[in-house]
Length: 328
Image 1 (tube, rainbow, N blue to C red):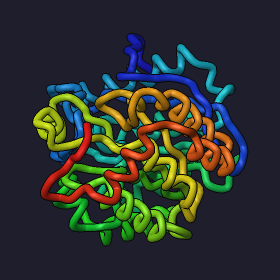
Image 2: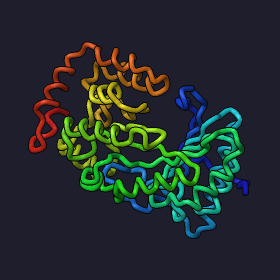
Image 3: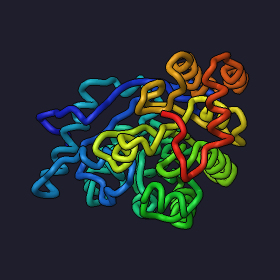
């Protein structure tokens, strides 16, 4: 079904991604869906971006119209990879009607597809059917289920993020995806609410170690303060500071697995930042690293001379949970 009235998705853009040691052309699509069924994470504002449909048929038509827009605006032959996002979970039947999935798989058949979902919606039947419709033999693994695990620590995920699922639920979804012929990409959140800089670094190091050899892809997302969130409330009160770019660099340099990182809002007060003087160069370098995988580049960036590095080192050593953040 192709809509006669194409409608632009929430966002859609072309870019490049690193895959199996190569740089490939990638199309990212954010569909306006029925909205996240969980909708309680402390740092997320995407839950406000949803289509208020009066029926399942209306929602399906709305999604079909967005897919038609994508197909009318882009030559899909130019892309090896497609990244699919919604305001919640692509495989949630309440958010994305199951009838829409075969249409997406048919449109992107032969591509590497990365689709985001919470673990409870990754079922053997759903994933197998999607993989079968997507696979034309071009790629050994045509689908990767992207899961916002955020951390391997259940207490941090529950108290600091309010994610609503356990690490055990993630591992079950991981096994299900693999059994259904799909890979898994884990998203990790660096420095959620209530953690000091040092605690956040320690948590990320442990999470990266825990995932080594278990998932096919790992992406580290330094926390950004989004509007209309609980995190923003604390940030406005001076009770939260986004992570230092120095911390991001130190984690990438020593990560036991290959990690991609796109520091959204990097260098801005709501995003991961240092002092404002060295930020632009470091953010650009981190994005370059995500494409090249060049650890020497990260090492060179860590040697950048800037007065704020001393501040960062002091914060790591002295910041305490009862008097944080020490800086803005």
